[in-house]
Image (cartoon, rainbow, N blue to C red; front, side):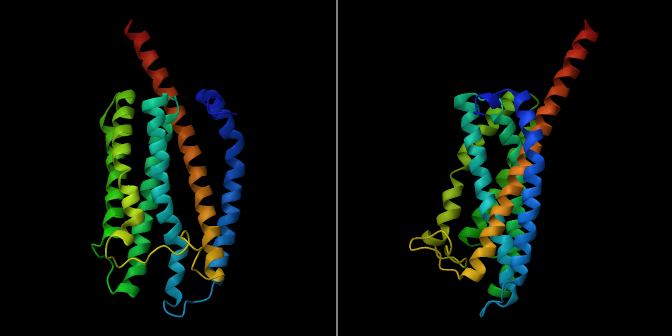
Length: 243
C-alpha cells in the first residue's frame, strides 16, 4: 500500500486496525526483553549502577529529535505535497515527542546528579533540548489556539520547519561547544566505543521505544481522523438544523 493509497482516511483506518495489535505486541515483547537485559547489565567501573539510567535516557533523547524529524517531513507533506494525512501525522506526533523529550530531560537530570554533582547545567546540549521541549509545547498550543484546522496545519508546519534548525544544534552541540555532556559513543566514526554488554541492551531498548512511538503515533492518528469525522458530522447536522 503506497502513500497515495493512504491518502484515503478509510484505507488508513483499515490499515491501523490490522497493524496496531501486532505492533503493540511486538513493542511489549521488546520492552520486556530490553528491560531484562538492562537490569542484568553489569555496573560500570566508574558510574556504578547509575549507568543503567542510560537505557531509558538515550532512547528517549534519540526519539525526541526523531519525532521532530517526522513532524518536519509531515510539514513538507502539508505545505508542498498537500497530503491529506500529513497534518494529522504532525498533530498526532507532537504530544508524543513532547513526552519523549520530557523523559529525556528528567532522566538526564537524574543521571547528571551523581555524575556532575548537579541536576541541571546550562550547557549547550541541555539548553537546546529544553528549547526543543518548549517548541513541542508551542506547536501543541498553536493547534489548540487556531480553530480552522487548515490554517492551524499551515501555521504549525511553518513553525515545525523553522524549529528543525534546532535538531542539528542538539546533535552537534557537544562538538561545537565546551559542554559537560559526553560525545557520541554509538553513532560515530570508527564504530561504537561502548562495550557490547551495554551496547546490546541499549540498541534493544532503542528499537523497543521506536516501536512504542510507531504504535502510539498510529493510534493517535486514527483517533484524530475519527475526531475530525465526528466534527464534520456535527457541523453538517448543525447546518441542517439551521436551514
